[in-house]
Image (cartoon, rainbow over all chains, first blue to last red):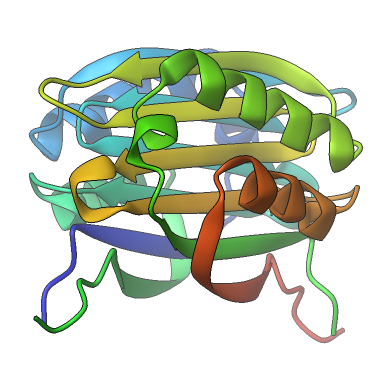
Length: 116
Length: 116
């Protein structure tokens, strides 16, 4: 049974920690991912933490994309939640932009409607 | 093994569709939830859709809280992703504010570090 939205929950690891700590690069990456997923962007928030780490959220007409990075662990948490469009294309764009070497993705069906 | 963050993925259902379609009420609810979770708010985005439905995202120093509502299905998707603080207290606040009657929550450990 299909749900109201697909939610990709991705753990990604790479060795390019500089990218994971670059708010401008990550903002651009999120917008590229939204475009690839055929999503409509309603708002973007990107914040940089001290001494390292970036959080970025794109609010979409289709739900949201978020990234939280821990460059010190070569790690980022990605979430792509979309009620239409192509979340896997958005994930692929982020995977390329972040030079991901290893990843784990769970795909959840959100908003499963009850029978009847 | 603990991860870098806890992610609560919650499906909630209630009968008060008016609340699920009220952007001001939902914005206030998200901020109350952030306060209860002992989180620091960096930004808030709330959007209303036609003919119904609201999306709200709070960007936190600790990661994010999001809500996407489908009032026509008496349903909302909640995500609370937090690298510190008390995500369950934030969930409880939202559950009360939204007059939730039924819910399912998954708790994921995000950013599990590899052994060694």
